[in-house]
Image 1 (cartoon, helix red, strand yellow):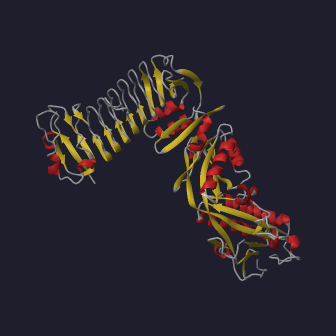
Image 2 (tube, helix red, strand yellow):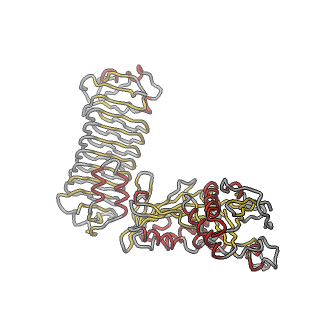
Image 3 (tube, rainbow over the protein chains, first blue to last red):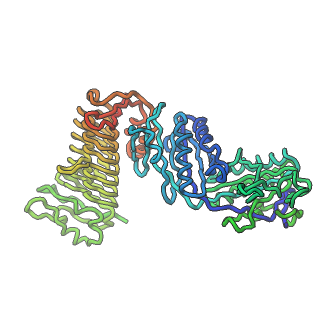
Length: 315
Length: 269
């Protein structure tokens, strides 16, 4: 495979392959940022991959009091799923179990979407007849009496069918410590990009997967080509000096958000350089036949990148 | 583009129905056609040209320069554009209004905003009885939009209010929020007796009352509610007084339990 080199970091001439998803955005507020964040963290827990969790969710950004509908500190959360029905189901159960229950919380839609998803409209029955509908201009809220006052929840949240899931960067390093440092620097840079989340723990996944497995009941299994302990035993994608690989998976409300996030992550990895960070960056794809969105690393690389660099084995 | 200006020639000799002077009803009409529109409410014929001197302009924005408490139905049924009256108006201003903005720089009469469904009405002075209320035989009053009264209002403001926001920066006479079905009525000043009388649902916010709500309203205590913050943010652009009231300490009464009992009165604590 041809590759580029920037600040000593090899960038594979390959692409990340991503898929269309359905998504929504919420604002969760509370009396303090701590409790808004707590509700958001709880709601987006166990939401790393649609394969096993039904949805992928994460915190987009924190909001100052002046940026939220009720003037309290808040957190913007994005939720992605493969179908509208599943997204609706996840929204109801996650907001109902994790936000409604959190002290002082309130929940609002934060996306002018193509069509509405039920939010408070499906949670209002918890009020057992004491719920109060309140329309203020174009916004419709439900006030549900709870033990610390009222849970205010907007009736609906906007849906977008233009979301993209599965943007990714594979970060390859000569030691686990350097690889993690590069991944952490990328996560920090991507966190500043609006409309995009990294749903895995701390934004990083160490167990990248391939489609299928030798076992019939497994739809996905370990990405053996990127496992350093197997590089002598399988058709590996790794150079001899690579000792650790970490992946960052990115979901965005738009394709542009995913591209911006990958660009920011790539820049951070390159700026850190190979001495303290990654030796090489690649991306995961399925040959370009499954996902309609392709993000080529050469298009997202910092302008200082120059090629051709060292040749690495192809994925 | 400059507005269509109707300059009052002299005080009218009878009550006039100004409802034909809404932007959507004047669209496509020439100045001569507008001047020939009849406004009388008695057998004596009165045309627009008899009452007003016209300065042609965009009919989407109408200025009536000079008011009278005999001008009824100003802005009735308007659905877009704006009407500004430099003076007083009579009854049923903004009746069944469905959009646009109606500004009265003086006082307005009874049934202001009656049956209104959308849009914004601002009255600089006082308004009469039954603000937003239904006429005889109708089951619902105002069902959308926003009305701001900078002065006081008469009796039974918000009667049968279904949806929308009514703000009174002054005081209200007896029966504010009577028979409310839903929606929001905010009275920044004092409210007369029997506020919220027979209200089923909805929110009534009072800066003060002559006395406690009646025994059919149940004291639920003083709370700092997120819903009140949302309401304060929503009204802050239209009325700083109303926003300040909503941001203050308010006691919640649930009622009227003489009927459904799912409404609420907030009173400054």
